[in-house]
Length: 248
Image (cartoon, rainbow, N blue to C red; front, side):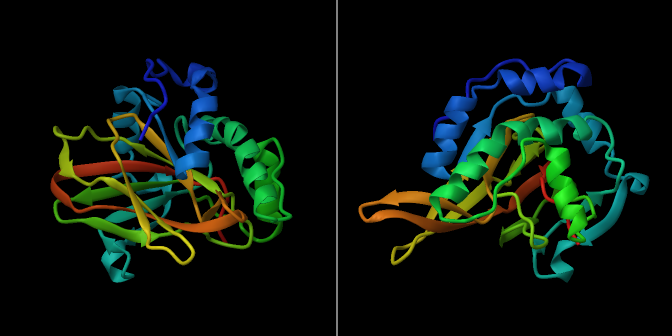
C-alpha cells in the first residue's frame, strides 16, 4: 500500500501538534477511503518511542493490566493508561482526532449513520463521559516471542469513534521479528480481504475500528473490519494504541 511521505519526527512534545499538522493528510485520507487504513510515517521519534515503552513496568501510569490468553484474545499483555494520561499522549490524542474527525463524519454520512462528531476531542469525550464511558482507553501493548493478537474490534460502549491509531514503539529487525499489523475486511457476499501493514519504529497506522463505506456498482455499502497482530517470532514488541472514545 502507499504511505504518507516520510519526514522527520517531532523533536519535543511542544512541537508534536505542529508535526501532526504537517503530515500529508490528503494522502492519508485517500488511503483510509480506499483501503481502510493509512500509514503515518515518523509520527514519533525513536527517543519518544523508547520513553513511552519504558512506562510499561510502572503500574502507577495504568488503570488495569490484561493478560490476553486468559480472555481468549491471543497471547501477550497490555495495560490501559489511567487519567491523567502521561507524557505526550494528552497532546497526541486530540491532535490526531482533529484530522480524523472529518473522515469519520463523512463515512457516517455515506453509510447512512446519523451520528456526527464534534470538531474538538474534548467535546467528544464529554459525550462519552455523559453516557458512562469515562475510563481512558489509550493502551500500551507488550508482546514476547510466540505472542500474537487475535482479530478484534475495540468498541467499548455505545459511543465509538470510527477510527483509531496504533504506533509501533519498537524497531523491527532489531528489537523483534514477526509481529506484523494485520487488518481484514469482511465484504458482503465475498471472501474476506487481508491487509498486512509494514511499520518502522515511530510509524503509526490509522485504521477503521468497526466498518467503513465502500462504493459499489449499486451504491455505497458497509464492510466490516477487524485488526490484529501476527505471531512474534523473536524479541519484544511494544505498541501504543490511541483510541478516541473512552470505555464504561
